[in-house]
Length: 554
Image (cartoon, rainbow, N blue to C red; front, side, top):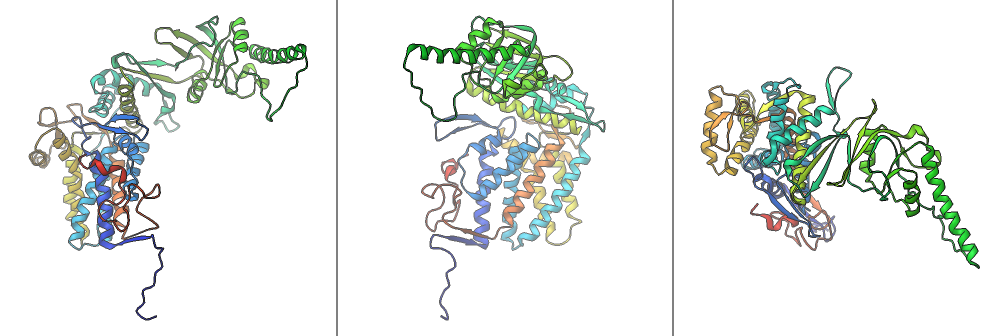
């Protein structure tokens, strides 16, 4: 047996070790980062994503691009998780987080070539990340969350470069109004923003400038019967998630009819059952019904006769929101419905837009609707993505109370301070701390690149300004000048920046920690490896970035 190789892996298994594994992982992660870099900033470009079903998405929202891309490389998917985490925690800054993670790995690759061990790089990155986030907090400006003008600037900065930019002044005003409407004071006197009570609805066929903020909810449905009232001032609304139809038996049954009289008796019983349901609704005192499921034609007739406004097939999410707006309970069984389940408010009808406006009454009622309008589905979808991010960002600012100067100002200042900190770090970790500082400066470089400027010249000017003590000096991408971006109205929330640094560092360290890849088949996370992935022994290079194969130019 001496000298005989021992095989412990299956025939189809593939393995990659040490430098090959590190190089493979870094290449995959950087490819993802480079795919979204060109979308960063006010001059960032959009991506058109076409799904396998032919659905088209046009966006420059980092997390949307990465979720829609057909990525089946395990390392690349780890970087996509960075964007998703950033979106969940901060609502914006996804492109920044992913781009910085990619740049950290690029810097790490240079250090690995100098024979610096990955654990030293990881320790250095952790030290630098902790220090950098501390500096972000120190540099951040504490603001009065009642300052609506500042909050509008935060919203406008978030929307700049996205589909919402053309009408950002109007939209920023609506966003700030929506956030203020759902802000309450917490037990410790802090501001608590509950964005669950902001409902974003979209409507095509009009201009974005006609978007509006409405008290209460919007239901994009018609009354089920022409004879029903379309408006109810003193609405007592019943929300029901069962169908107002003849109940079907749970098991298959057959009915043998021997005479027309028997058939008529059967039909009369069905009619009586529907009549009884309507009488149960009337007995609660309800004069408006929002039903999540269907309403039988005969039941519609009886409801109209009794002057009750009914709407059917209301979306589950809308029913949940109406529950908050009206202070109602959702009824699942009409037999147990009482007047205590009803919500109170008013229902009005906009015939031009074919919408119901529902406003609540009483202390239990709360919630606002941001109605976004756009000329086409693609326009309104991108508008919604931009506005949703801005809502999250303004909400974070109100609850956190810290803001920063944008336009690359914070990155250059933190990079400068991190380089000074590196002098106090001993060992090889010092090189990793310096590399971290270099990686931070990717943001102003990409902003300049995307605006068609010389990134080196811009970075030199920015560094010089910050050495002179101008902490808020950033790039005005429209004029090419170095200005105080805070005064210019480019304002970002501190929490989003801290989260971006934390997630980017953790993702880069996770990738660097891997020195061995053992795959049962090809390096793909989906399918049987017939497409994407690396067939046979071809695990080099990008491996299983199947869906990104033709996206190199991005």
